[in-house]
Amino acid sequence: MRFEYAQDSEARSLVALRDSYGLFIGGSFAGGSSVFKTISPASEEVLAEVTHGTTEDVDRAVAAARQAYERVWSTMPGAERGRYLFRIARLLKERAPELSVLETLDSGKPIRQTRDVDLPLAAAHFFYHAGWADKLGYAGFGATPRPLGVAGQVIGWSSPLLMLAWKIAPALACGNTVVLKPAETTPLSALAFAEICQQADLPPGVVNVVTGDGTTGQLVAAHPGLDKVAFTGSAEVGKEIARACALSGKRLTLELGGTAANIVCADANIEAAVEGIITGVFASQGHVCGAGSRLLVQEPILDDLIAALKRRMTTLRLGDPLDSDTDVGAVNSRAQLDKIAELAASGEAEGATRWSAPFALPDRGFWFPPTVFTDVSDTYRIGTEELAGPVLTVAAFHTPEQAVERANSTRYGLSAGIWTQQGPLLGWLASRLRAGVVWANTFNRFDPAAPFGGYRESGFGREGGRHGLEAYLDMPGTGTPDV
Ligand code: NDP
Image (cartoon, rainbow, N blue to C red; front, side, top):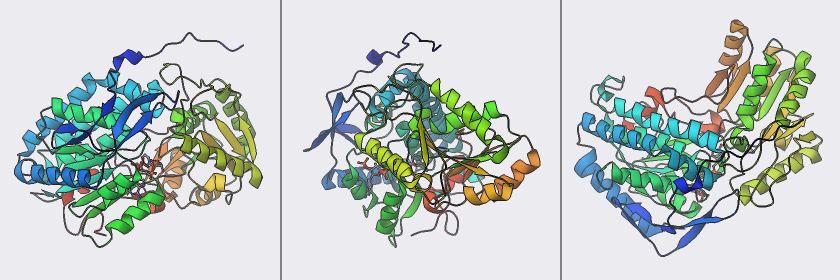
């Protein structure tokens, strides 16, 4: 019997949405000539109008960031910069209930993810980097490491506020100023963050937020007034940005997508592995860059594991993202839903077997049921292209060597997971996986002190930890190359 829970929604009333939002440049908000609407992907309700940043707007934002860099931020003692970061961290914590509802409304992510994971982690990133601001000389990059200057930062729609924190916290801690362009479909939490900068009395121009679509992103990434470009998004756009930055002297870091392998060995605790698989690819509808979308299972336990996984999938709850009991929320946009549906259809057409958990999907909004593909060959698009949705492909392996070969048979290399109770096997596998992060008997765990980043088409550069500071410090001969 299926137990029906009473609805337990976080109050929408925690958020006071404005009808329209301007750009945040030089410490204040100002509207522009052109606007677009941001909607709730769960209901298609219009949430607000947001300004579309133009060439002139990006020029003004870069000029404001340059002025703040030269006059205030780069010369401010690290301890003082750290105090601003602490303030921002405290404000993020204080406003976490409101911000998590806002993020859920705009992105479709379940409130359990935004409230219990994204917001605490975003605040933790500011706390962590606040601690570094006056200790950069002890970070192993020389006695007096210097900032780079003005950073242009362009981010995507998966975990918008958390990705903002990953970008802005280290940049500011190291003495840089920033111009940030959030995704077109999830601009609201970045604009709320801009308000927090005002509340924290951050000097005007240290953080600038320019909203808009891909063309605004292009304007930011290609702006000649920048010293650094940091990008989180798809490999396709990452390559374009790399071309735009080539030979410009700008430092570049790219945090791109992935198709992470989640490897379950025959001795693994199946119950724990099933929970890890669910967390890895179905939580947040698979809208996580490191989502464990390729499950590799050792042959002897394949059938048992798939049966246990399907049983568990039928108990997931899909629906209102503001409901605390919801596991699977709305897909971020119609375009992303179409992409997921097209790739899923290609999986069937190529010969894989499709099974979706039996959910009634809401009438409005963008929804895709948690889905598993078995009988997947390494050459099928469904197993090789990043899908960023609640879709898992399953393949078997016999030997650890085969697991490594299948796991590495991708052009990406962001993250991977291993499930085994044997320490030596764990070490053997982990050292051979071409992935920036390898989780052991867990999945999708993040910590500000742990560097995160990719190999190959998953990008280069690290965010988080001591390594992440390197991306915002001027150290010839170290860090990511000038391109
Ligand atoms: P996109 O690459 O489509 O977009 C990312 C950002 O770039 C958006 O702000 C977008 O604007 C902007 N943009 C689009 N075109 C251009 C362009 N030509 N030049 C400059 N900027 C541009 O990625 P998604 O928004 O679809 O984000 C999801 C992707 O991000 C997935 O691949 C996911 O794996 C990856 N990701 C990686 C992470 C990591 O740490 N490695 C973390 C989280 C996500 P607009 O929104 O208007 O299109």
